[in-house]
Image 1 (tube, one colour):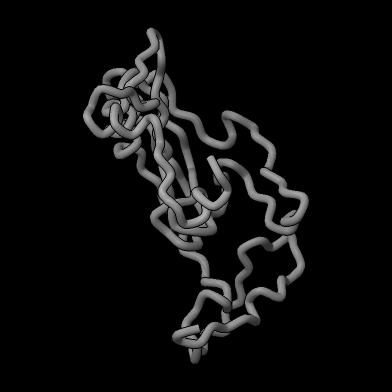
Image 2: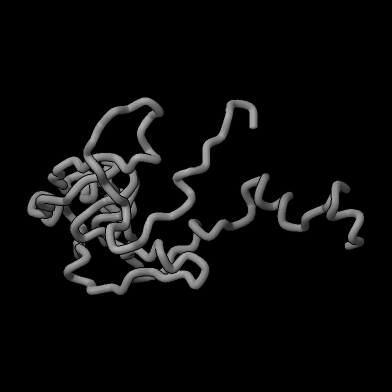
Length: 165
């Protein structure tokens, strides 16, 4: 393929006809014997302390092979050389820092069973104050909060974007 074709030109892909007509296979179409499926339980709060996680009902969903929390897996925080101030655990153990933060992982025989079990996990939260850069301008809350309390403040919260920028 010529460079000009990839920069704004039409690029004919060999796999498109079979995928579009239903004769091809996507990764999700591959079925392996004994393969299990994982679904994450994610935070519904933007910033909160996790006060409890009840997995009892989820453990009784048919097909569930396991439900794992941070304490079960003992995973180290993900660290990125350029973002070392923002290292965070793969599964939240004590505090969630954004909506969608992973709290637990449910493993089951089918995707549907894993989804049903994940929906049965009950997470109790104690809301924390939003960090100043997440609050609307003009908010007068005097409660201070930090998403990563072990780090020094980042210059990012000082940046503001005007409409249309």
